[in-house]
Amino acid sequence: MIDNDKTHFDAIVIGTGFAGIYMLHKLRNELGLKVRAFDKASGVGGTWYWNKYPGARADTESFVYRYSFDKETSEGWDWRNRYVDQPEMLGYLQAVVDRHGLAKDIQLKTGIDSAVFDEVRHVWTLTTSTGELFTTRYLVNAVGVLSKIVIPQIPGRDKFQGQIVHTGAWPADLSLEGKRVGVIGTGSTGVQFICAASKLARHLTVFQRSAQFCVPAGSRQVSEAYVAEYKNNFEQIWDGIRNSRIACGFEESGVSAMSVSEEERQKVFEHHWEIGNGFRFMFGTFSDIAVDPAANQAASDFIRAKIRQIVKDPDTARKLCPTDLYAKRPVCTNDYYETYNLPNVSLVSLPENPIKELTANGVLTEDGVEHKLDLLVFATGFETVEGSYNQMEIRGRGGETLQHHWKDAPSSYLGVATAGFPNMFMVLGPNSAFSNLPPSIESQVEWIGELIGWAEGESTPVIETTREAEEAWTATCKEIAAYTLFPKVKSWIFGENIAGKSSRVLFYFGGLAGYRAKLREVADADYEGFILHSDPSSMVA
Ligand code: NA7
Image 1 (cartoon, rainbow, N blue to C red):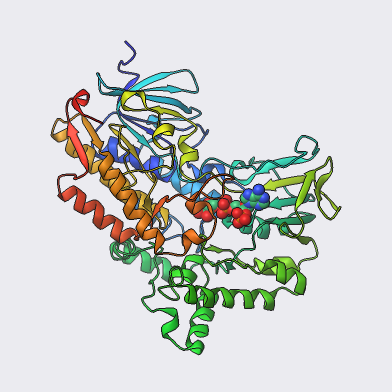
Image 2 (image 1 turned 90 degrees about the horizontal axis):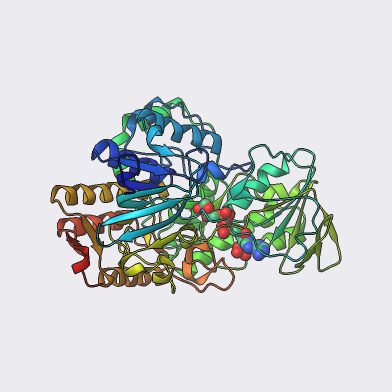
């Protein structure tokens, strides 16, 4: 018998980032279940544990990039900055774990290798990287959207004598001091790293595949009055965040860009450039930057004009000007374009001058130049959603693997469940809301908790979604995504950053408020789209 007191749980949570920590608290402390959370890392924090690269910080503001369920930790925290950097974020998450006494039910340094559903006993059996076996009635994946790092294949990698690292697996003790550093990638991570590295490295060479639309973050210390206002209006502020689209805590514009005069448009863009923040620039200036090509062009032209103004060398400015639509995940950091005026920073535009190979000393580009490096940094991103799941063998009804179920593209019902995998839930599964993530995570954790609590009350051991519900949700997400400009540009949002992968819908673009309304509607309709039953073998998949 494998499932005894020590190895059998009511629920197992995989991952201890923002999602896993709250899920453990919800199921154990609020529902009174016996729960264990696992993480392959040697500390909690998820994304904020792994991404220790210089410059790593949240780029949504500190007051929205935290939990609303834990007002006490928020109130007690000495917030100083508009944006929270990685060490502080980790400290905050650890403080939440401590406040709720979660550590004793978190098993670190333990990856989950496989999870198999037993249709007779209605339990999941998990095997771990440490060779242990556990069983559980409910399985919650809180494995993150962007966890599986991607390192592109570049010829000659074995020849390079320097060090190679990915920003998402940054060694805590790695210093850039005095080094010749190269970086590939100019996404949200790349731009943060580039600005920080330019101040530390002897020389920094940026290898840029696509030029990036980057607006200032407006990083600064926050005043005591700002903190006091947040604390005094905590409930009201969070209510506003949950009832918005992007959940970033600013007022989203309801005005279309082309409905105002050119002069007014420039004034609005300039004002937001001054305030800073990428999401604010995309969604706070006008309502239709991400949907109307003319509005998008106006915003793009404004940013390109800024690049030409800021960057002193015209050829560097030309290379830095994006030619795509402004329709990737909006990016911001302080002084990004100014960085290219520094004497120790150089830019290589890969479409004009591709990498030929790595040599013993660095990177050889097609123009015959060998860029000598001590350290090559890949800020090349992640395999969105499915990368996090493909690292485990998950088998549901009839022994079907999740990989097989998702062979065309990952899918789900409401981002939280997938057909054929009973009693398995996901936080930030495919087609969850595209928004600032902590409020989205909280919405799902609370909803999953409510569903499990309800099922427990009904003595219903098995909950599963149907293929019809999953297909209908996928169709809804596709329809809404097609209304935006995001699918017109290749990025991780549609999984197209991975060579050979076709565009697939991975997010619900209807906004957090709309998503929450849908969750409520489904719960109020007795969990429409789910089947709750006590005999899983009677269910026809
Ligand atoms: P992203 O946003 O996927 O950015 C990856 C960057 O790496 C991007 O500039 C890519 O260029 C570049 N890239 C990827 N593969 C290659 C190859 N083979 N050669 C050259 N350049 C390459 O990842 P981030 O880590 O910055 O951000 C991910 C999210 O994490 C972020 O949005 C936050 O939500 C948190 P491309 O633009 O594809 O041409």
